[in-house]
Length: 217
Ligand SMILES: [Fe+2]
Ligand SMILES: [Fe+2]
Image (cartoon, rainbow, N blue to C red):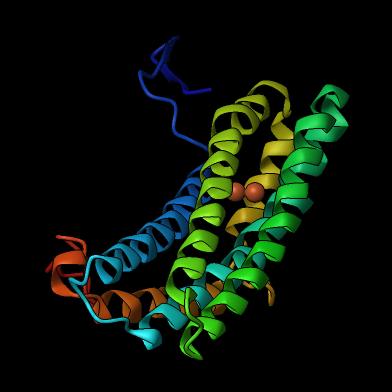
């Protein structure tokens, strides 16, 4: 709890560091949110005739949005965080059921997004508009979902999880050797995100982004 001994007196430190699991959840939300928001920007540029449709770029973004949550994010939330929270406080079952339902709903929405994407590329009359509506609907769900997790679930976790719960949750989120969401998978998605950024029109790229050697450019 941020206590350390100074001489014979225990002194409380001013800042309590966040649990690694909380930092990782927020970082993964930021990554996913960044790609979705950028896809919305790209679509806006196309609709206002400021840019040509770059289907290869959008396909890479869809691959990221479709796969990253299922490979890197939702399994850890459900298996390690939600399960322990349910054990500590059954009153949380309602919100956790709703959030797990949204994980499933998001996958269904992605299937629809990908269908509209194919129709657009095949020349459907309202292809771009239908794809944009599908992406916007997914984004609405995502913002609501991530806000509920950050505002309510993480707050409940801090309130109800025990120290041993936190050790297990932090260890699970930090695990680097898991074949499902370990380091190699994380590296693949970081690489994919870099490819997406490099392909973006210059004005849509983040102002500061570290290169492979860690330099900012
Ligand atoms: Fe989630
Ligand atoms: Fe999440």
